Image (cartoon, rainbow, N blue to C red; front, side):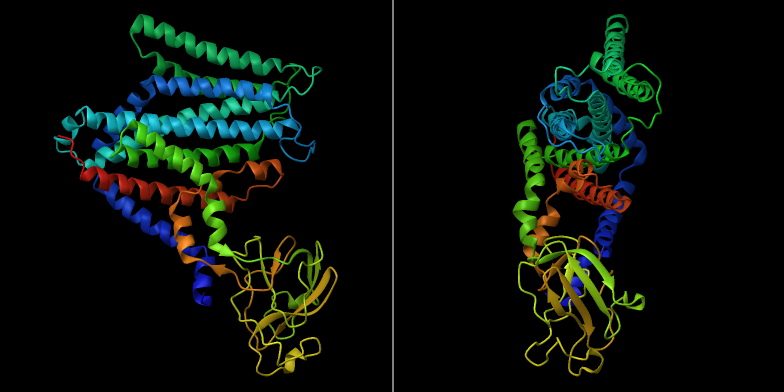
Length: 487
């Protein structure tokens, strides 16, 4: 692949440009969607969604599953104390996040189908589209209403998980239960159910709507209380059990649920409930496996070493842009391939070699020059390149040969992977990988359990990616619904 296309794929401006096109189109669609009518439809859809029995059932099941997760996660996963979770609680976090993801996927499919596909089948949507209301307003309004319901359910499920993490796994018989967690969780659930029963009996209010709308703020209040009340009923600093990285991971998971809601909206514009559930479940599973089945074929390269330490020979050589600039490298392990003088030096933060932090310079011709003795400043006929000039066991020296040129996007650093060839790009696999919603972008459990802080740039890109996916699938939903016969 040409250096220009390699640079284009590497640059984040490509992602921003694609997002801009999708969002501009989506904004144009919303502009035609009659905002007043759209918001009215969203409000009615939200009420319909939270009144569905399945909405209440899945939220309650999620809470019950979190209780079982606390009981059943007593299998040691290592006892490092450096992360926000350690020991058995690593498994508790992993299983708990998976529970939220699975319940949220089912909830999105059931709710979206009930408020769109079922209305089409029952012809009730005909009373809406027969009025001066565009079908665009109907689709966007339905999505916003379902999305609001899903987010409230997702937040409630997340707080159940946070309460379980505060309680922690009972690994041995000597472990004691967390009294504040049990008491305040019980009070929040009991108050919401009792109030919903009272209002249903005396005022005729929907039990599921009242219970779920009360449960969300009450369970949040219970969590805030236990942050300042310790396990032994003593006041503590709020930061003692506050876990910001876990909250970030949960926020990223909520973004995934929003994307799944848009997929369910698009599917329900044409399919029935069963097929919508099948589509959402398939996207959920394949979205988690797309890195393995598709992503692994999109970019192909084989690293030979991993950098443990990288230092320029002199401080003014850090840019590697001037002929003769050198870096001294120390590897974490001996290279898997024998490195000889003149071999090109490429490096990347990822083991698949994408993106490369070097520009796509061609490998130099080692048959014409002896790079172990070559005076790089006086070399002729050598294209700008970064090459190895010496290598021994776990150390090596690289040098800029040929005319001055910008060959790197950032200096080599610890944990970068070293390559001897350019990364091969499969355009078909890249296209498929970009179209398929990738759930791994939102799955940050591994980062939390390995004590890797989630950078703000990743969350920004994840939010941008979620906005792109929502725009794509809602645009598809609008196109599918425009030609749907509802009469």
